[in-house]
Figure 1 (spheres, helix red, strand yellow):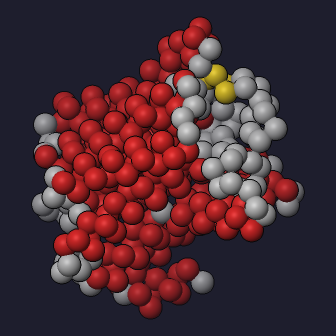
Figure 2: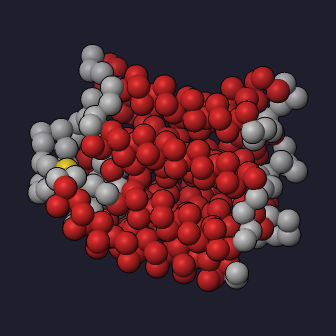
Length: 310
């Protein structure tokens, strides 16, 4: 299957599954109701994550380009997505969710998938688990405004595909294009005003899968360790910054980090006078700048990437 058809299939499946999932969500009460610590002003169905997962799985399955690494990442992300779905149905304790994230990340590294950061295997295993858990939580936290998490994921995945535009990266490209297509198909219904949310099922699945793309294919282990460390960070700079910002702010305020609130980066931009859509678009722009800096640095050197970021 050509890359274009793979992308179109993932997009189309995610797109066509959203309307029936909306009806199921309303019929079963799987909706997010307005609350003091939430941004939505009306009840919104929560089953969008299932459209994401289905779109990715079917397109990867028919592509015939998925190997062990792709199936490991996708299967683990789906397991975590199912944990998120249970959390959407019956909220889990934060410690329970974290424990599941660690368990699923451990499953990945036991399949010999890890970041190649050093010659110390145990160090690489620990950093890989940290990366998977951190990005899962970062996207879970970032899903705080219409279209934000899905759009930021799509931008990161788009740049990730640019890095894969070369021989020998077919398997990784299959995973990235499936995730990209499904994210954009879902985003049609999730951009403000959102008609469906991805829920914890979608945000935990998507965050883990985006992190997992760093473990499949050439990324970019042929270059220096600095590239291996900083390029993935640049591609996901918005969710990582938002998670760090919220964690520090809530800790300083004496609030539990896991408690929801209107204190995210997106909410601060709205408080400064931007509309909801404008705030999301500003963060899209910052994510695009991070991706462009990563690609420029990889292609032409850190000095060029640094100039672009300025």
